[in-house]
Length: 328
Image (cartoon, rainbow, N blue to C red; front, side, top):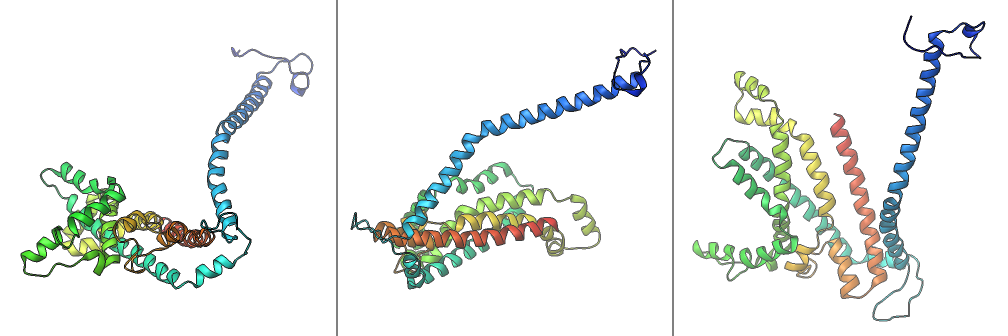
């Protein structure tokens, strides 16, 4: 006889006639346990939703309200120099912004800036990762020094490069040019966009290096040893083993950096102010110039919406690319 108590279940055919069966008790017990668990799960989920609801509503309002106001202002003829003279103009601001020659120049500069920084950071990140993966003296200190520029504020980094490196009189590059008998150049005036690319790439190179190094260290050493036993050289191992293994890390670096590089602003403001002319003006700086230099809030709002749409198109494309790469 089992120690589990027998209970009378009135509606059970096995219990008719005063017979008690353990199976009836167990089935009813399991049913009630499942029911209690379902109720507990439901109440837990309801409580969790209730507790996070204020944060979700606040974040939603924090994103939607500025976007809605920007869309509203983009439909108005709104200039800060003419307060109280706002008027509805529909899509006219979008027409002016998209047909402005400065827009096409800024769009091209934005694409060149993103592509240039990605090339430097991806190639440099792979090379630094290969270097830091080697057993060297003071490896921990070297890694900290390599990663350190990523924690420098963009404004500070731009000021350092502008005054210490690219100054045509007292900068390090000018001193090096004079040392070899060359004429120093004014980097920010002669090659402004390339100068901005160097500054931004210097900031993002540690991030790419860290991601690449993490991927490289996850590579199985047995694959390298097998390749060496088969007579593969360093170049062959890099092309056929290391590089394919780092493909996903490269894709992640491209995705994350592209999203941030589309909105580069501080480096341009501190160094070139978008000039000379529009040679280093990107979409972000163009919107800033229209809003706070020309005081055209309507046109700047239309430019901001255009920039958001273009950024989302690029982000969707990159997310799909990353998804296909991760599934492969």
